[in-house]
Image (cartoon, rainbow, N blue to C red; front, side):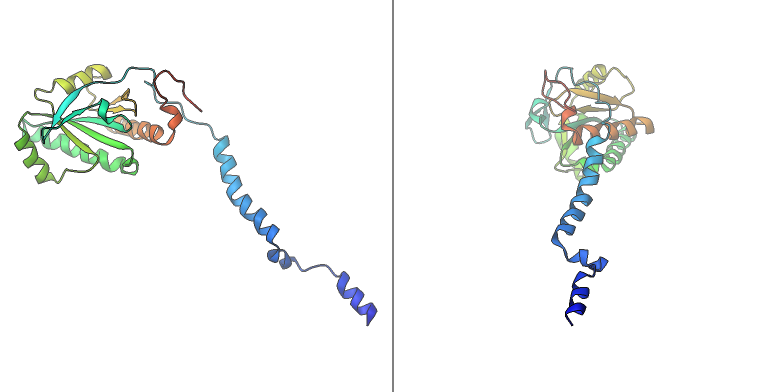
Length: 212
């Protein structure tokens, strides 16, 4: 009996016995978390969105409720600036549809993105009726009265592309891109906004370098 007991005690543990060991599960879970983290840390970051060395965009407007809103007051958010002409119905509806499509395109960034829409009118009541009709009021939408469109034209001049219809401002109000409404332009806007939203080091305070 003693010899039998000695033989049994010296036999190796079955392979599944490892599953009962706490240290095995610590190593297993650590590997599951560690490998993706190492891959992420070793991945190359994209090129930063240009414009981080430029000055902040300034401008002060009035919204449909008569409240003063400035670009400086929107600092801390990524701001996509667009236009909404009100004089001609077809142009107005086309611009609004482009805005709606873009909102859906970047909806995953909604916690950090604000849309500042420069509306070419001084008639706040007409704007309110239109926004009610389109159910356009969202927490991330700011509609600003731009009268004759001088504010938006200043954005076009600043962006350097007369065909651009959307402009991206970073958290410090610097213009980081001007975009046309064609497919390449909207693709580039979505990519640039995603980079700025997810890589804080690419949006440094004024005077500081990009942090990788």
